[in-house]
Length: 314
Ligand code: UDP
Image 1 (cartoon, rainbow, N blue to C red):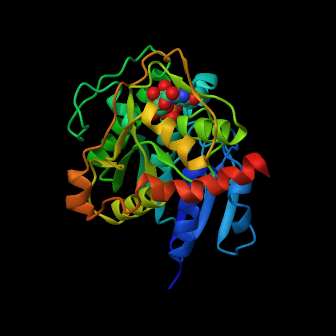
Image 2: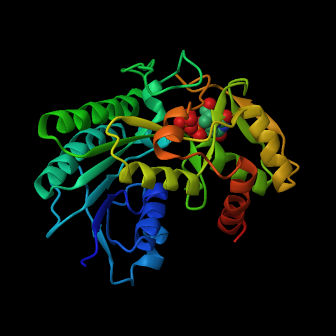
């Protein structure tokens, strides 16, 4: 039997590289595509020598070609942290729109099933808590985060259009704040920021008054949820995230405790449109995927801290 071939866009990124590992373990032939704008070849270096792994250095916003048959496409290419998409607003919109269009077109051409990476950001600064898939969200289209949020909302709409109009097999995962090894130290997100500050003995920078909440998911749990969703027959969006909610202040104290750091928490202005609260309702994922997170935040933070220690302290 020939191996199933999988294209993973953003394959050298944080999530993409973990997905490459998973699909290699499942015995697939994996093609990782990445323009290395925010991805890093070091994340997939261990796979480059494998005969069933290919790396294509390509920007998915431009026409995408893959020869031969293709079973699955996972579209994970995009700048994904607020400072990244503020720095690269046009690329962010292009990869969410044109990149998605190219991937959907390729899926149609190959008769492949496609899963697109959506986000809790489609809920914006949510007025419904926790967030359920049937909540339409509260997004400012012209605010600084709009480039990411609206690109992902457009991506969902386009994906559904290909599903209903062309009968394409589509899956949409709404990803909540995820952490683990291979996150970029300087991506500006709260977890790498706090951990690197704590390890260096610098003050931890909480934005606003630190009362805003997030719910952090360990990457292995996310990958399992994504795999199950791809293998399911459910075409509508599904939240995959850990509902364990925490304020940014509590999170800062947790990182200080876990690292044994003497750092203090200092306060900086809250970025515009920063969501006040975020927590997934995962009733749907439990029901249709029989999925729920296995790792607590503390369990996930252990390997993550080890990774960051190596990066920061060498
Ligand atoms: N945040 C913070 N200090 C930092 C970076 C982020 O207090 O150094 C806050 C940010 O304002 C937000 C939360 O932490 O309320 C999560 O931010 P992140 O950039 O990780 O992701 P988001 O969920 O906002 O996309």
